[in-house]
Image (cartoon, rainbow, N blue to C red):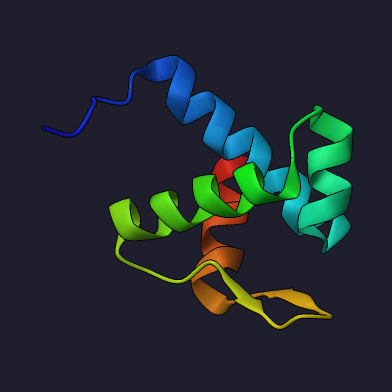
Length: 77
């Protein structure tokens, strides 16, 4: 059984998502929020599964926001 995500979890995910979008970096967002890049990646992957859309394009060197991510960013702010 999957744990439920309450309002705290939703707020945290939006904060994390916004930090990544602002910095265009999972590492920088993690440093800003005091969590590891691996945890950042796992949280965003879980959020993408929940939302059923891809929020960021990722390569080993770059992160860019997708069109779905742009919509989410407007909503998150």
